Length: 238
Length: 246
Image 1 (cartoon, each protein chain N blue to C red):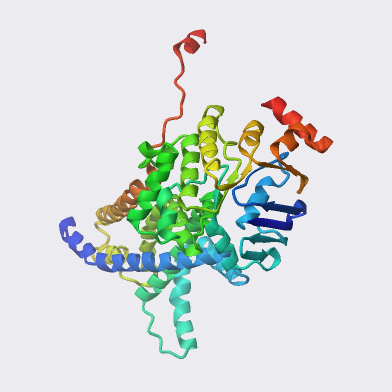
Image 2 (image 1 turned 180 degrees about the vertical axis):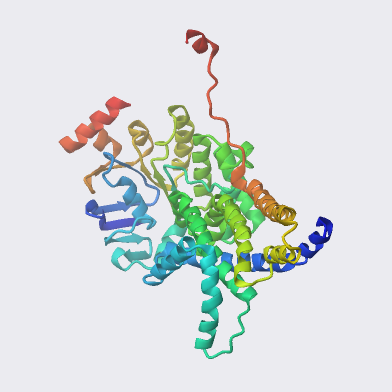
């Protein structure tokens, strides 16, 4: 089998890889938003539980989190009296969503806290409600601070999707391994090289999208120059 | 018009306001002076509840609030009738100069965009910032930022305007442009409370001077009373050091 025949076969697994990635991206984002709100507002008890979740998501290796989801979710489903319907793909989606949500929360929280206290004060003093303040003033500024970290977290997520093969989800990495085993490991280097290109392209697209938003941020406006030109006389006296 | 009674506030174990009493009549221009750390800014922030006193009361025309039972409706009503100009400018960094002035009008006061823009442009012209209407805060000097803050405060048509050390964060060469705008605002008859270390300026524009010391109002009178005949050695010492510095 040559490389040109291998590529379409690998790409056939791309939709599932993208489905897992996008599910984790969207649900992880929602989880992170909720977790950040609860952590910033310090709701008694609940905030501590959310802290615990974030700590779990950030400190437990992702592959272990996937195993926990894969073996834990069916138990949870049975506990609630339903039939076990959890597939490897579903477990991968849930496991990665939880990981991405916890990780992203630690991008969002510092971004929120990075917004100057004075911006809150100004909005409050003018009579903005909490929702208006967040949507008009604090939110857009926090997004500006969060974007670089958010870009990184998307890239980490794309990398970590490669781990779902350990719980049996048929993503591009799992498919690559199947191809290599079928071909008696003759084209290992070529297969891994194609995989590297696929992952690089996915990361590049994610980075370009985040960068686009970074450059569009109103806070990206070029700063007024405040540097005083050094006079020639001063230089001459040095 | 505005009356604060026995306002107390502490940050941890530090008592900042120790039972402040202050009343302001409509049209008053009151300058609050005093040593640093004596609670001047905190007092100003108690009026619009940016600082939360542990006890005391505030009366703002018909609005009355006991700080121990502060309610959202009263706080919001007071905030809608006051505007604050901050020491650190606190201009919204994600908006242009024009948007900064327009946004509270559209979002809080529910004015139409056209009406808000008309008011905003008028206020920007008043503070001399029309050419900078489309600039972002990162592109402005300190003086321009503070003038944006003043235009934003004026645009909401407040009954009382609170100036919190508006020139303290400015380079000396930019102080003049801001003081000129403040003088113009206060001479228009709007009730103003001004926390400042610019003694000569306070003397010139105010009809009342309040001297705060150790969390209380230690002296309260006309500029002539305060500056020409200080009522206490502490006030005399403070004025001497401030005026000598300037």
